[in-house]
Image (cartoon, rainbow, N blue to C red):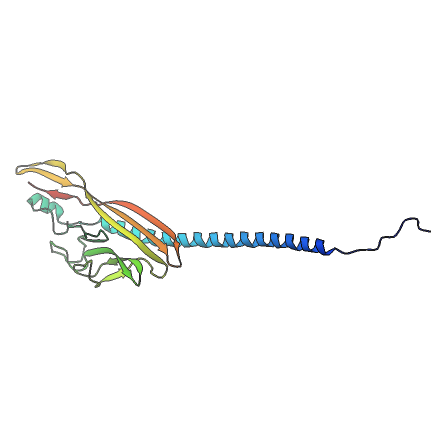
Length: 225
């Protein structure tokens, strides 16, 4: 005879099942929230990288061209004859500070001319199309215009990013005496252009990035008294 009572197998009570269900739901909710947060963070990081790629690409083109502004193959002859600055010296920024026009002498283009011709002008501006800001370059117009659309092509992709701010500032550093001639002293004016740009992702306006750069124009302005 068995002295110990036999316990019959029993399942979970309703309370235990409800507690297990609640705990399971809490764990699942935490995993889902973590997954969503991770996916969102990766998406924002990819978006921010896309914005920076667009800005860096545009900045690279602008800095390379602005450095060459004012180059003139005949500059030394002009200085020797006392007729400098040349026709390529002008670098202008509009009153809004979002458009720059410049030129430089190119071999095989307008040879023999002492002023910019077709293919020697360059322009950069911010334009707004369908509510999206776009950085544009002009290499065709003679000369380009900040307000006319002829010759302008996109530097940034309006399908991916919108350029929200673009500012250009030209600084003429203090003239530095460079020597003397029988007619009097020659002065060399150094030039620098500051570029500031901001952009956001079209699909997520909250994803914003900016880029600033100072560009030293290699061609200085030589003036005579």
